[in-house]
Length: 373
Image (cartoon, rainbow, N blue to C red; front, side):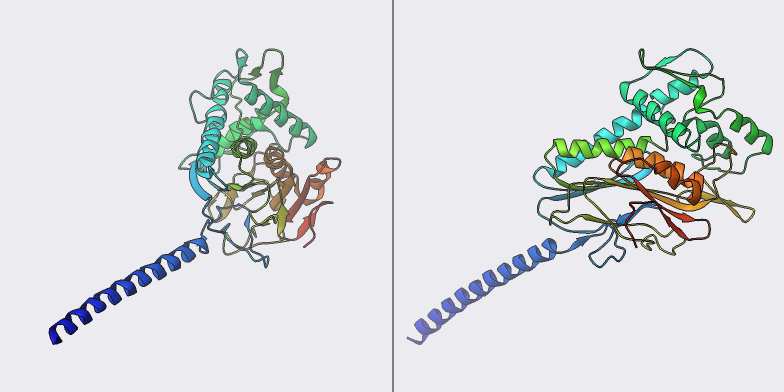
């Protein structure tokens, strides 16, 4: 009987331990789920980029609560890091397709890709017209409209000046004054001949070159947003190195909160001005802190005044809110070059577009329609 009792007791002990083990595994599974469900994914803003802000309005790093149907990916495209955060069924496939679309745009518009439309136009400068894709032609038409609107403050024929300064290479430098003068003489959007009937482009003078750095990324971000929508995505945020595009609202139905980087902040998460709320729109910032080099103690950045060939010095940054990223991209450059006095004037009469300029002394200037601090 004692043996039988001990046997039964050991049997009950094994069953008790098995039950405890099952309960423990269940607790671990639940805790693990909660940690994943309510953790945050850090998504650091790139240099010069606006970034998502939290509910209190404090600067955040475009982080978001993990959702079972959320997908986030980041790739290096168009000379910057692009992050896409999407929610909903099929988010992974949608984000992948959006990146493919941006890469397709890059292959059309990059001056560093030998087979691109832009490279072919530049190589034929002073020669015969070059037939291009409908998209490239439309971008060049839009860029010329912005050039006319801004009095030449935005000009895609800035290529010779960019080359003179060595931006895009490993050795940026202050160019010789004679070299710079020759480069500036080649900058003239009026010498870019566009034929709508044949979709051809001709640069009138040898040595001219186009640089679509101030428009192509904005267009690519818009196209990425369109692809996400085509895949049924209703909530997404695209961060293309300073170009922020919102698709719909956040998953909780609230607007996306975008903080604007302080140009002289000690951290990329330091913000200036109001937190911007957007739904289905774009916020784009151009700033003198995005790309620069220091030579002989002086800081030189990559946004040039087409009239002088020198880095524009009237502002530290210019932020545009607009329905589309392509328009915000061009206008942020134009307003930055023109500065806080003349820059906002070019936005008059443009529906749904507003600006905030941080002037050369760090003061904030707002155009009508920009959210109040």
